[in-house]
Length: 275
Length: 275
Image (cartoon, rainbow over all chains, first blue to last red; front, side, top):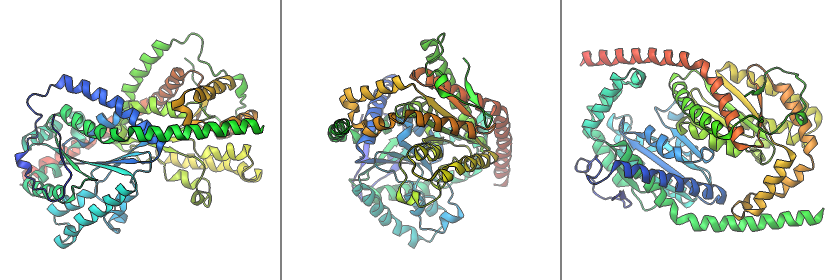
């Protein structure tokens, strides 16, 4: 399984040439088993990170309507301890939010040490929907790629491990999912004529995503392109990318916790003697 | 299974007379099966609440050290969709927090419509640890019961379903758990001599809990006393209390979503015709 992660600014990207389907040889049942195993490892790593208080994790989920942002949160974050997880969804900005710079509402949801934050949409909307629908002048959104890189670099310097995922679905799969929503009475409340309208800007969004990903992929805040036409494969790619990003820190976190344990034990002994 | 929930102010309460062990006839395996079934129902109810955006849920977890607040979050909230769950832990207040009234830091974590917030400790610490250790004058903390009732009543009027849980463990079980922490190297970093010191104030805490629970139990914000010496029974009591509190709203939430669905479908039709 090759995961397509871009960690260098300026790479040329053509989303139309990248398949949204899982690789042919991938097996669904094996994938689910692997996901469960990864889930257990993630839970364990998260516990160490929580205790060590040296790093935090920021997961950015972006994708077109129905790409599966909610489903990814449910299935991948479902493996984690809710105590150390926060999910922030960024919809249409409120009046107060619009009266601040575009990173203001984002920054307050940055994860604190030990925690994992998941952004369901994010500051990237300000170079995506905002660009496609001309909500601000081009001169303004063009500046934002640099601001985003600077912002993410600062978070990274503070110990935040940043993972950005583009959930990549095909035009056909999206149509299917929108139609399914209409058919199923219990999902009808999720219908939005805006989703259909946005389909007419499909290619504009493609260009906007390509440029955003290309201009903001860095070593410290890489983008992973997730084939998302199959939900099980999408979940596996996200979970695996996450676990591989955390694994190298296990030893350091464990050592930190051991050191804290030694100190706490000594304090307890001293307290007992002092009584 | 009888769950001891207090929903009337002023009831006399003697915690020492209430068992922290599960009732004799309770079966552990059956309890785990029931918990799984409740978990599925909770997930479903949470989804309806999220969509309907009419109510929110606030779960307050209180209990002595090692009573299992973290474990309850892990096991009960683990059944929910992380998207609509937030966990706030209230430790020693920061300098900024101390410079505000005691409800200031709490209020900002109140759940928004559709969401479920879990408080790991809460505003109740301001009539518990604060009282036992004389951190503010008695005349000040005595006033807080009324402020808490008013605050919770306001949240309730805004559609917040409030459930408060006292995780009740015995003195012996706590000692066992503290000793286990010392023995297990991987848990040693959780050791705190303060936990042992606080045991010396056991009875003071008992009185403080009794008065807090008695003075702030109301119809809209009841306290449930959870026998917490056994983790599996504790989880079951919390989960069951929660699901029983949400169940009566299912029909209303579903009707709301159906109505939204009808409207959204009509909008989509109108948009299609207009093209």
